[in-house]
Structures are given as C-alpha cells and as structure tokens.
Image (cartoon, rainbow, N blue to C red; front, side):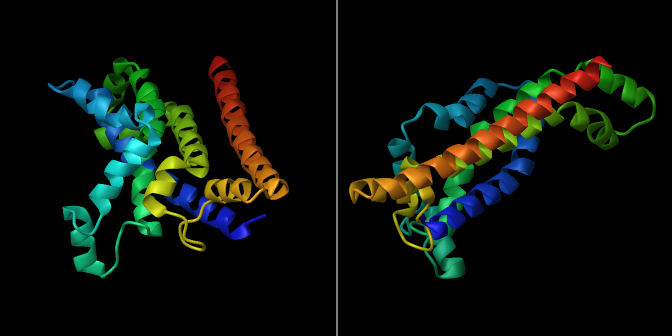
Length: 223
C-alpha cells in the first residue's frame, strides 16, 4: 500500500472541495437567479470537463499552466516555481475539471427554491444576504452536500488529467490512481488490488453518506 500516494490523493481531494465550495455556491446562485445572453454558453463551458476526454482537457490545462504561458509565466515571476508538474498546478487543474461536479447539484437545488419564498422573506424584513443564509442556503443544503461528495470522489479517483498535469513525482504529484497504474505495469497485482479496494471503500462510504443525508432531509420535510 502506497500510503504517501493516498495522503496526496486525500489532500488534493479535500483542498479541491474546500476551494469549490465558495466557487460553486457563487456560480450556481448567480445562474439560478439571473437570465442573460450567453447563459447557455456559460453553462456549456462549466459542463465541458464532463464530456471532454481527460487527455484532451489535461493537454489544454498543461499548455495553460506551462511557464511559457501567461498564467504559468506569471506564477513563475511571483513565486519562482512552475505550475506544471507541481502539486499547486495539480490543485488548480483539479478545481477546473471538478467544477461541473460542484456546480450542477448546487444549481439544481437553488433552481428548485420557489421565488415566492424569497419574496416573503424580503417582505418580512430580511435582507437579501440574510435571506440567502437563513432561507435559501438551508433549502439548498442537500445539493451542496451532494456536490461536495461528488467533487471529493471524482478528484480522488481522477487519472488522466492528474497524469498530464502532475506527472508521476513521488511525494508531490503521485496520487493513488497513478500508484495503482504503476503497480499494474510492474505486475504487483496484490498491491494494486489493495489500493483499488481502498478507493472503492472510500467512494462507497462517501456516496452512502449522500443517500443517507438526502433520505433524512426528505423525511424531515414531510413532518
């Protein structure tokens, strides 16, 4: 069992979730409340990582984060380090390729909130910010939990984009999915099986949490 790879995978998944929580909330809330020209294109761009092959997405991200690009060059100027083939670059790439897993469930939850509830809250004297915190956020909570679990699970098991952006640097960018691939190539099937079962168990537990939480929420709403 490659414990170092597991630690990097968990760290990457948790950091990606923490980053996409505010980003996903902001994007999904704006999309659910506003209609504007080009909204379809905006939603298509957000959803694009779902349909693009990981190697294609990874290639474009690698080019964007390279030191010769604007983003990569600016990062090198500020920090003296490269984004490509680094944990920081892998983290930024994870935010992009996991974005639809965070936005879509939140967006569906916010869209299901009746506009009349907001209007009643405003008539009761609540500001828009307090309406969001006390009315909309609790109602959208199941979608938020689902988004975070899907983001965590997807980031934890991603292979193609991780390999393209981070490579296979032990102790920095070598995740558990890469370690499984290496073990298979080296015919270390027992180790690959153990790591695969670990990812399977984590995915099963996290998805079970979503179903259990949503079931309890539906039960409470019927009371």
